[in-house]
Length: 105
Image (cartoon, rainbow, N blue to C red; front, top):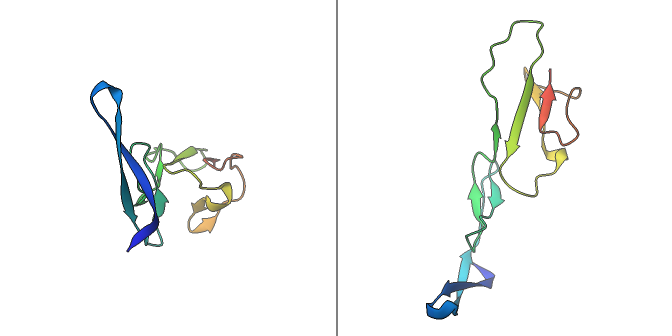
């Protein structure tokens, strides 16, 4: 299936003139763990795996020491309420930054 709306795709020609044509984008059916994303240089959206990554995933700490963990969200439109930190399978509610990208434990 294709989107019902079409996007204009422009190509720069000689003397800086643009040549435009319509392009239909596919309908997306992203998996539950994927998000719809878009690149600045692409016309159509796509499904993105691994849309959040740890900026400092490897830590050598001892019991009782604190650690600061940071994540990077790779797509726009992810709200703070959608970011959840877990420790030993339980939701962490303290030590989290306002934007929820940083947790101190």
